Length: 242
Image (cartoon, rainbow, N blue to C red):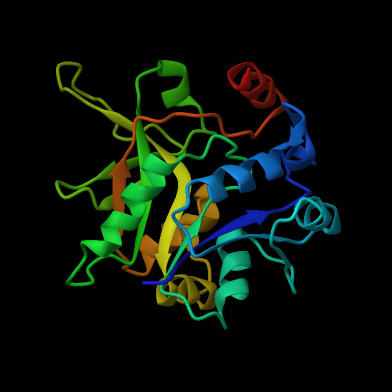
């Protein structure tokens, strides 16, 4: 299988504009993410795909590979789909541009899903991490996921899922980490299919796959890291980097 990584990078993030160009230990967040992904040595190629000449230049001037999006896109998956449409690849892993603590173990688990999927039951795979902090569980910025007995995703939500009606029930909560591994045909299907009601309501792009009957294999990881969505996240990332 030919496996690549694509890092979608939008400069004008709604909650924290320009966050990918913020300094993290002497380098920009996006460059840190690119270098961390490259350092895993899991991929035949690693690209940043962006709508911003600022981010494009940041990557290429440091010797990296970047692509400019041809069109405006609603989400990172659309941006990646445009980029890989004419590429000869089998699997593409979407690493979020605001994930500078990307590491080999978790990405390797996603790749193993497809290596072991001899019956081609999996359309895409993604990561989840157990959360126990009550405030994080309640936080609508934290996307929660519930799975079946085989760890296929049942639903994603910004609400608290599952709802613990019975206090004696041993409920586990999982946070969805926005790292995806797609079969090429699955991400192209996503690109061509219109957004439906649930995705539009929750603003969670992977719900589109569920609404169209795709199968998402979730892989548990214990690696938390820091996703940089807010200035406060950036400060936490700086402390962790030190």
